[in-house]
Length: 421
Ligand code: HEM
Image (tube, rainbow, N blue to C red; front, side, top):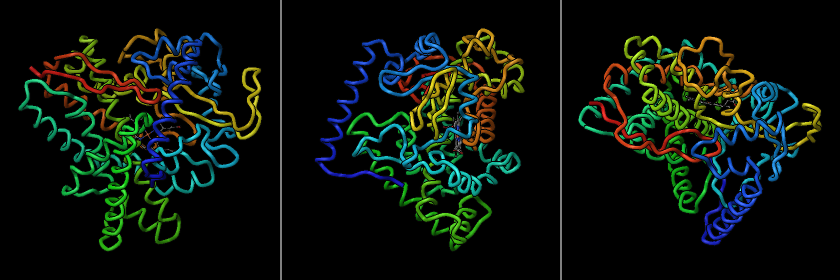
């Protein structure tokens, strides 16, 4: 599940490499490269997206990759069979820093045919009917967390609700027992944060420990299901392993992928949506008066503050896009968060409006063969969470300044201090 060396020398090398990488990014930022500015992490990335847009549908960053903010172009690249995830030598394009612990996120970072072989093993557990079976468990987890908050005058929505609910759901999906619950929450939160990248030696050490502990936990869960099969995703995967449809490592990596892909992302959907509603009180009131607006809150939040801000693709052959030749194996950065505010596609894209009707699909769940397999589950979680907040905390308001994460990949909050009375 994890590849990394662990030594004092390795840590020193890692510290030096991170320092050098930061210096290069800073320098390119000073030279006016918008992608370098995004790499440094922005509290408000949208003005930088606009700078990217003014450079045309596709431009080359001084740091190497091609970058696009265009909705139609990103959508077509994501669906284009000439593009994939890995270069022709099987590597990921953004060179992995040596000594950084790296979570293997299974088929998210694989091309066909392995991508399809592994995705097909998981897909039946994410169909709308199967997902609907989780509704009572999600509602229960949501109610339990909100019951806890009843005892607090003020609380941090991110720490005490938004990050916990999706982890509870992934725990339920994989069948992690109550006795391991706190442990899963603690280590799950650490690996969830890797979507931001590894920016310090301290975090790299923490990550190594959490990856190791989760590997042990998942290994034990797999052994349990071997002897005591149930009607769940873990049992289905264990059976597929017995039929040699995947290797032991591939099985473990799927657990890692589900733990990482479903937690941080959904937490930020809940946090971003709550903040947007509180900053647009008339829409918060409308939701309180009509809970059936919750799915619209989910969709508009995904568009307006996309929890995943960017993805990457690699052309497997030389391609020409908008008259520009992109050589095979180049890195192409797709700014999903910018595509969702593309004025060519959305009317007044900077406006948060849960009543939008004429919106084409946002790209927050990607597109093409890597389209988010957990989208129905994330939508259900968001729906339940927004309904529950509006019902149980009608007087919800900010009790302090929200703290925004500065990240290239993730759009979300570090904390959202709120009061319910
Ligand atoms: C609001 C919440 C979520 C957002 C915004 C989100 C976003 C995404 C995006 C953008 C991708 C594709 C990345 C790319 O094309 O390079 C993706 C893939 C994936 N997501 Fe989600 N996701 C969310 C929730 C979930 C949940 C709840 C799960 C499962 C528990 C999940 C599991 C996956 C998996 C397994 C993939 C890999 C699909 C593939 O490569 O074929 N996601 N997600």
